[in-house]
Length: 308
Image 1 (tube, rainbow, N blue to C red):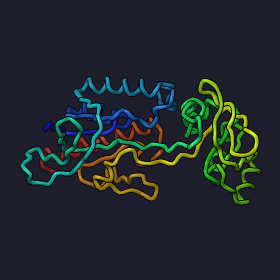
Image 2 (cartoon, helix red, strand yellow; image 1 turned 135 degrees about the vertical axis):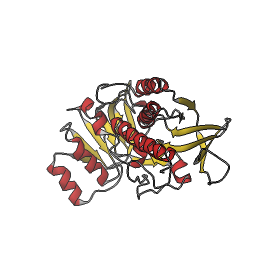
Image 3 (cartoon, helix red, strand yellow; image 1 turned 60 degrees about the horizontal axis):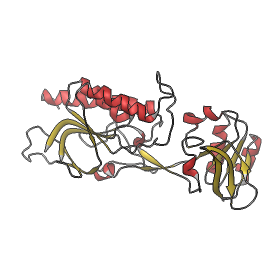
Image 4 (cartoon, rainbow, N blue to C red; image 1 turned 180 degrees about the vertical axis):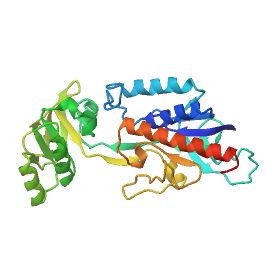
């Protein structure tokens, strides 16, 4: 059994920034990460002050090296189970959580931060994997600039395609809303028309291009659509079962509800990053990690003084 002041599950910007803050507070910290980030396909991260265009892999390596300077430990594995510990179980440190990891001793901690994130359900279109992260994306703020003034497809289920297309008009006037086989209400059609957005209602079936650069989108009927980039309206799901395992409350979209400074409403359990549904930028996730870390440290300070 290994014990820490704080265990952090998830080694992206949220988890790493929290680890750095807590390490500098002289807390014993472990980061447990399974190496499957949401932005695995992205070539660059944008909108991150001072390191514009850094790759996701490089940012994670920079964060790990910085955290290690402050004594933070890392375990590259998946947490398979998490549970709260009952008071009076013989644990003098008031450990509140126990984490199970395959083929390793269990870990106990006083505070637990979940930075497990979400994952995107990708459209089921042949060839999409060849273009994802280069010319197929889900976030206009992250990748719209790279496709400014290009021919862009906005793919979504019915009216979601129009909403996404309207957002993408900030970056280009050559936008086609593809509803993926669903009919649009007349109000949505008129809204698209007023804003110069063309519509394709056939079901998208295949992407074509070279070396990750999209050239055309094929449908189940009608001619292919020449295009340079495709953005899709993403459906998000929680990457980890740990939040539900520990009893976190979710909204109707499945995103975790936070209380106060990244609290969960469960004593000692905190959340940071995309899993809670705030603005889902890397820099925002990192900021949430810092907020959670300061809240965690304050609770530990109070408890050490007997005031918690």
